[in-house]
Length: 230
Ligand code: 5RP
Image (cartoon, rainbow, N blue to C red; front, side, top):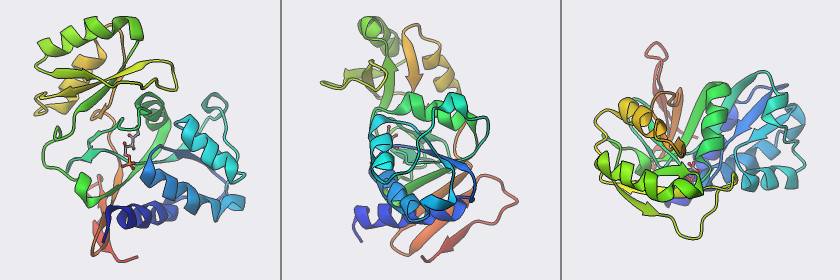
């Protein structure tokens, strides 16, 4: 099965977590595009959404799904988003689509983060893909030097401006043996807006698209994990 089919399967599988009469947090990316398609099929059952990017907002609005300002939303029970990598502790690298800052804000507000990925994104240790860091443009060179001091090799993502008007550095070769500590260290650099390491607040549930079906991994050890065939 192609990656795209697996993405579609998990995008639709996430619908099971959507409760009627709620506002749903919506992430960004090609997997989430399928989730938005799925959400459109039950759009009259939800109040609306908050969105992590202009791209997702446009897709939601094209379906006639309301998109609210997060500042006007007090409770967000669910956030559904993809990832570039996810480990067994459900910590993630995100930001391939440059939407990491808004994604992290919505993840912080949400009670439950459901991550939807195809099985190629599963890793034992994070760091196979470079780590995106959103940076204030004037701090690009300074932050790059600091990232080198942390052991990384930053690369400026050409021709990309985030929805917040900033730039992205993709950092290779970082030691990811302690993702929570690394997240803290990079976030502490002056000029960094957000690092795309979601270790301190990881996902609560991962839906992994495999050729055998959708595997459900719960962070809470009391909830049984399962492979379901959807
Ligand atoms: C965007 C993200 C995406 O969730 C991540 O890049 C995965 O994207 P896709 O579903 O297209 O593989 O973090 O900033």
